[in-house]
Amino acid sequence: QVRLVESGGGLVQPGGSLRLSCSASGPPESLMSLMGWTWYRQAPGAQREQIAFMNNRGSTRFDDAVKDRFALSRDDARNTVYLQMNNLKPEDTGIYYCNVWPPSDALWGQGAQVTVSS
Image (cartoon, rainbow, N blue to C red; front, top):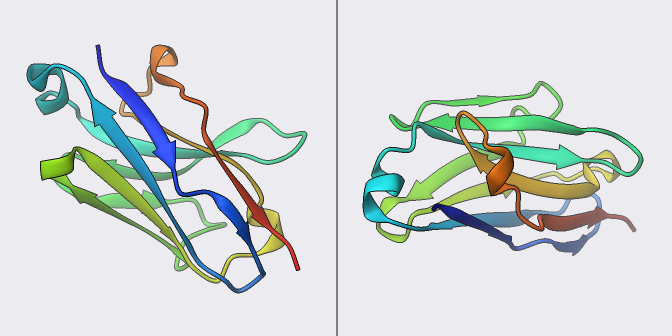
């Protein structure tokens, strides 16, 4: 069974940057069969929504709200995907979750809290 752990959240001022990590662990055959990765954000009082996607070939797609400010990268040797967030805005505040693609309800973790505030 694959397990995902997010890390790297914190408090940052508007205009600042953070890098979130999503580390996967589990049987090698399960990790190798992953089709892609997704990042979601749940703002206070709102539904969780997808903001970023990377397929297993490295192609990425971003929600318009974060496009041009966020970037995805991965380290296959560490089974880790990174979400680099630049020029953060107060509206980026929320809990950030990663999941695989297609997303699995069984893989939601604790998420990483990101707070953008002066």
